[in-house]
Amino acid sequence: MRVAIVSESFLPQVNGVTNSVCRVLEHLADRGHQATVIAPCREPGTYAGFPVHATPAFQPPFYRSFRVGLPSRRISTVLTDFKPDIIHLASPTVVGAAGVTAAVQLGVPAVAVFQTDLAGFARQYGVRGMDAMIWSWLRHIHTRAARTLAPSTATMAELVERRIPRLRLWGRGVDLDRFNPAHRSERLRRELAPNGEVIVGYVGRLSPDKRVHLLTELAGLRGVRLVVVGDGPAAPALRRRLPDAVFCGLRTGEDLSRILASFDVFVHTGANETFCQAVQEALAAGVPVVAAAAGGPLDLVRPGHNGLLYPPESPALMREAVEHLVADPAARSRMSAQTRKSVLASTWTALCERLVEHYEMVLEGDESPSEAPAPGRLRPHQSLMS
Image 1 (tube, one colour):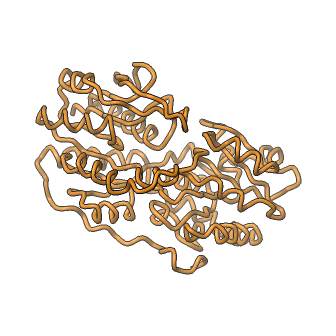
Image 2: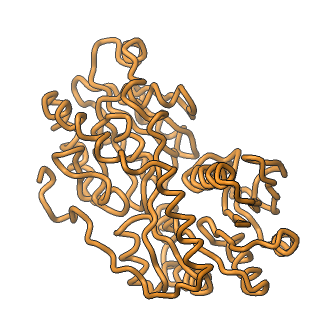
Image 3: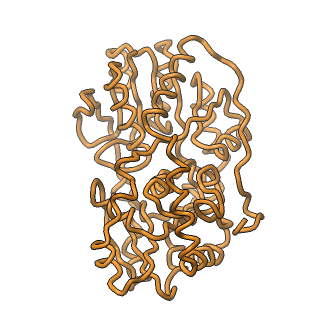
């Protein structure tokens, strides 16, 4: 199969879209498929033996480390020359819109992977009143795709409500070797918490869309060392407001594996997560999770079993959930024994095999209606500890 991936993001930028695209490329290479990538990366190159074609991009003034792709004739040219069997649109917005237009012109089916809550993203950056316009644009893209893959049941329900057609559920995989309790390091724990504090950690972008300012709700918790891993435009303000926290900056590879597995509690502040890979990685590493009861975490966190959920509009209940786990080592231990089990079936190999099945069904002309979304496990009005 010849697969052209048109992505809104790629290396060296590290985020959920980039990570998913890299894992898909590795799987396609391993299975003998051919692929090419078009993305707003800094320079052309290769990945997994496949060519990567750079598109024009600009850096928003409020987020200098992020590159936003621009439509370009180069997208159509690369696709025409590659002659794909199918076009994979990774979180299509701007570059993806040009990709689906080229797909229609070439008569090649496109599979769109919905990954970013753009309306929620805009609201977190203070842009109000844009929801209708944003969803109109996304509907324009996704209605021209042969299939849209939603990463979670909550996101699928939202897409149904927004009249996005031909929906299927496709989650995200996790590297069970990289994210593993075996990487827990007592030496690192002593460095991070020299007085034996309970380590409560966050891993992710330090940006308004992740609501990282809510981490300040955890300031002053007795017996707790807050550890923050990541970088972004909110980092300077957060450092000022949390002088007693440990800020590790951006970490990857073995460093990230050790740090994450060495947490006692993982806390996630975002409320617009279509999946939330960071939560799944924490679970794979054996760490109980406290996350907002919205979006992807509803599929991942089972309250009282592998973590706790809090109403996204109630930061005080986030603090209460963290306090509950900090004060109850037996509950943490019981949940830690279940966290990894809850994600063992979600390997990247299994998820990418399922993705290829979606490609095959589209190529065979399967145009059946959308799958019905299953309800999430917890709604914000339900008991935090249930």
